[in-house]
Length: 522
Image (cartoon, rainbow, N blue to C red):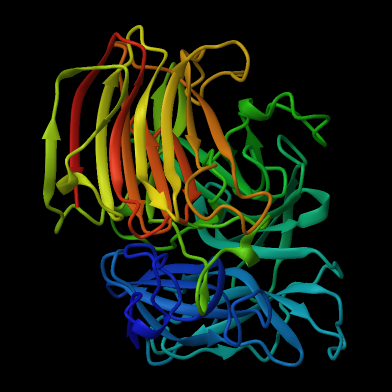
């Protein structure tokens, strides 16, 4: 067992401090997220033999606080018959599966078997089970696998939960027919025998295959009498920023059928003209395959995503390991502009142990870049900033600025007023946007490893009723995660600057802007 990122031989300037990365080799989609006996289990797609995709197995890490992770042995390895693709895990409290021993509920993993040419089911993707009777330490594949076979080559990514409502009490599985852009729902009494319930889709973004669905219920504004069901559908490519992304629908679920209240376009997407109007989990390039934890304490809905993009995932610069997870996020539904929307807040690595490095404001912002003192610089920071843009053309933050081999480096997070050119659609809150938030990594450091990596991500954003823009930024050694307007908008991008590029600055174009407050924590 190894602590997060504590292997010096594989350490490098890009290895994150607070984002989970496997000790070595390849990592992608989070799988089997479950809380049991005080421990959070993070399983994930993993290649135990190399730092590119292949030999898909379930890697495993555990945490008591969602921040410090301990890597465990590979949980469910591939073999000559099957690769172990994405799925979920549940605590079978009632032992409906019969896998429990001595009155102790088993953990049951429901995963996609991707059968190899050596298998009698070669070319198919089916759903299978593995179970653990020692709280996730070891896993046994069910002898009766597969438990659900549609004779399909693209039927995958089961997310299973216990439904208890007017229609009854049973397990529900949400999986995808990926190339048909469908979420298929099934029910089961025992996790072994499954009955089809309904099918959702295609709808909204269909520019790539649908993957990694999730379905869960949330109260609106914390009111248990007013709830909506959230259907998450990841897709690749076809994301709002290009390549991989996650979208979500809000609606109702009666135990049989999910009915969306936020569908913008029915059927296959005709063009990109409505893209900004869809519900996006994140407007950056690097937040994909996001799914939530089962059995999280206190009813919290906690999600984590793969912090990468299939456009360039195999090319990112690293040494002996590749890819990391996002910070864990708590998601909630809040009413904004008269309608419920998804808001997100990171599980904060600085909350318990961070040190305030700088506090400033209120103060007017002069035209140009005002560099913060060196003690407020760094490669691992939390930055909380409130701006009143006023009449300035642009305000924001310059991050990870410096120079490498004579070449300037910087990542720019900036808000600008409505230009009428790049801005289209409504803001995620449903309002007419008063401006646009952008994250520019075109000069962020090493951007030459893939043609698709240099990019500028943009999202329509409305200032609040008092004209304020609120930003919370989490910087790690290879990433920027932005939460704007109290988590209404998120932007997640990888960056690969030089170790010496640690400066932070305040940006304004023109006069009239005010820095209301700034807190830098390290």
